[in-house]
Image (cartoon, rainbow, N blue to C red; front, side):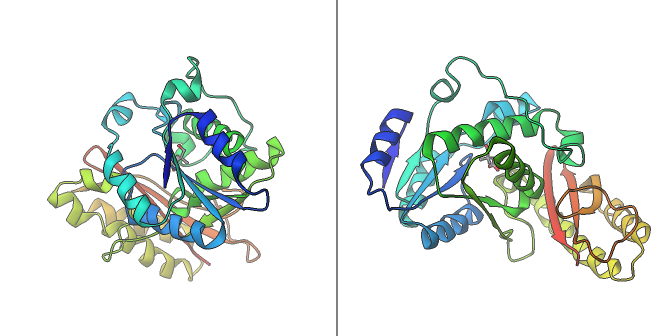
Length: 280
Ligand code: PAF
């Protein structure tokens, strides 16, 4: 496995590769867990060369506090990536990426950014799309992999690729869960014992909500989820939404031709956890 800190050195190595080799990119912010590593495995199966990027992107943090507290575990990340057979790792500095101009580009996401995460995290998706576009320009991958835990991010990146006319193929990867159902996240390590015990209820509530959804009453599902979570003193619901899987518009009435997904954001103390589930 080779580790690159500069764009130039990474690109020189990519240029040396046989033209027929396919390249898969797995963008990350480090603090890798089994969820990330399962994405590396999928990328390894589908490409000749896998690049993982590790870059904590400052322009996607709406709260400075979150950026400051973002976990950094570079040494163990590199060890884990090497074990999984990752070929190249790109770990640039902020200066290398932003060249002294650490600002996000403005994108038109055709409304995908207006709901859910977009409502609560101003500017977040412009920051995400800015870094992802930069990474695509630097590495020219055939495929790039994104976890479905950040489902809205995934749809927004697909939209960005379309509007920017990029040729990369965006590959979604299913949510990887702990045995108790909690969606894997770098933030889980910050949960205290009580919060960690309470957190699986997020997914359990989504599962129960999914069952209730079969009865076709949206309001019933929404009030059920709210009531369930109110009873858990470790968890504080930020939003629960049922939306169209593709355009992410909140559902007002059910259309049998549409695929729906439920989205949730919950605070455990000051740690924000998100999850989602396909409903039909
Ligand atoms: O999902 C993430 O970890 C980040 O948003 C990403 C896609 C690596 C961009 O910084």
